[in-house]
Image (tube, rainbow, N blue to C red; front, side):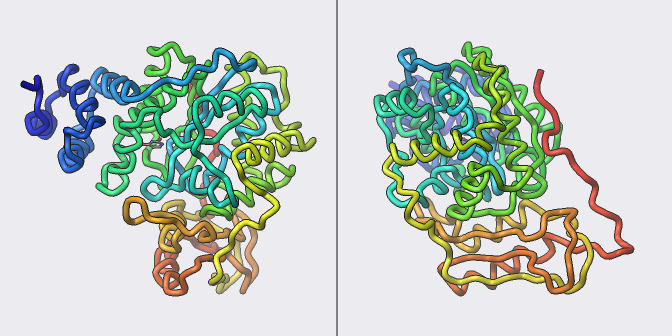
Length: 428
Ligand code: URA
């Protein structure tokens, strides 16, 4: 006879009680083995979403999810290994230049990444817009690539396989924005990566899963404590996600912008966040004498990126896909661009086909949004503000409806939008 059963555990959480430690271990093992059904796990996720988990419960959940798979071993990689993860944002292509910058500075970055979750984009969906690129790598391939190139972006696969399924289930059951579930999802994968250190980018604002600073601080605190409990030195930055990062939101369009950053250009906020996260990672790696910004100017980060893409079968000489149907939104009057709501732009990109509405759905790699004027930039009457891209013409109307009300051009009498720091704070 089984020591626990799913209906009782679901009811325990539904009624606001703590799940027993052994019950959590049993549940995650049984879900991984297929004896707890998807609908039972969906009900439990909703109960957790509504009732939360205390810190010890969250730690046990995370350890159980991590234990559903193996742990990578990088002891033979002749460089310090450092992980990075973002809690999910809009236009958040930072992983692409960042892994290359840190590799160019002498550390190695194994980046187990995900697909789009909720309204946020996924690093794997972005990378797969490069012709031929595969995110499916074995442990040996990851190790070899870290030794030779210093960076790999791959699907979690056998790392925390319970999270791969929980992640996909949360995406379609309205249970993404849960502090304990985000903490468990991020840390189960990242601890299984087995790196020497970990840097977390905890997003705060309308386009993040944590909408306010208090929740983001608690998420960061829990994740840093989980890292410490597993012997992985972990630091977190809290960064603004009220407005999209950079000027592009989608898949291929974000890769294009990442390539601009790697070529020494690109939007200032993407460059600043890449460099700051790289500094945090290099400090943990004991390489804080290196200059990450220099690798963007001198082309060494670009060399690492192209080597990583080539090692994973990608061909950057093939033009990246661009949606065949476009629509440009222009300014009626002149002024200054006010706030651009990250959630509105994320939903616009999603309607254009950049994300999924059903599990396993194919994304349109060429779908997305280009932002022509960032908050605070001058706008002339009739100037282009946004260009929308999709392969499906009838997606344009619903996408425009999502964007409507998500931005404002401020005239002379309007109060300017408050300026917000991109990097809000760092955990001690
Ligand atoms: N990234 C993850 O891996 N999981 C989440 O829940 C959110 C962001």
